[in-house]
Image (cartoon, rainbow, N blue to C red; front, side, top):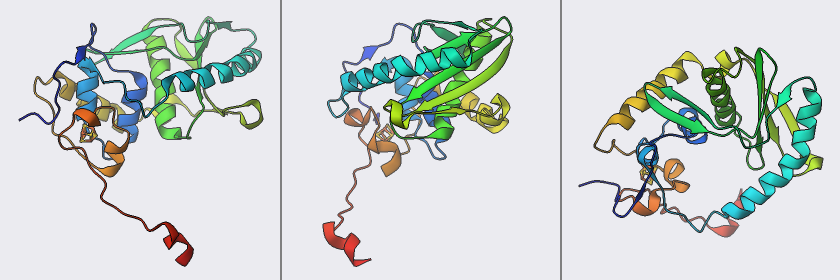
Length: 228
Ligand code: SF4
């Protein structure tokens, strides 16, 4: 019996994986391949626990002051309209599709900046920005990477723009191999073996359809922290 119930699911017109999901998987030392397999072919149900509209609103607000900073940093570059440049490439024939927040280019180099208003997950987010850069190069926008950036913060006062290391230090050989192995899994007609754990299942968008989702039974005494 399947572990994931895909009854009545909305199948994607174009089977593809997004840079954020791919990066989340690669950064996780012990990931579950099942949501990747499912997300490649279909969209998960909308869950009420995450306020997508509020997230988009905050993100847009932050972008209005990060974008001019990015433009000033790279004043001689051509800047694409934020959130508009659709990028696509393949890993082992599987499509990766996404739209970076901020993308600029000179004749030879591309510059990518992604805005994060929540928790800092440098490894995961660096992989995401690096993926956009690879995609831009694959589409022939430029021949080389000029700079990769992450903008962290939810308002002007706590904004920090970080310049990331070289792409080879982000997308290491080991991580490239992990991504290629994942792509082989996406090809399978049958679902891959799930890997339920508290960490993997907590925010899994497929948990409402998963028969093996980890259920936390841990009970923590509220005042126990005071006894330490
Ligand atoms: S709920 Fe857990 S086991 Fe099920 S698909 Fe998601 S991560 Fe995997």
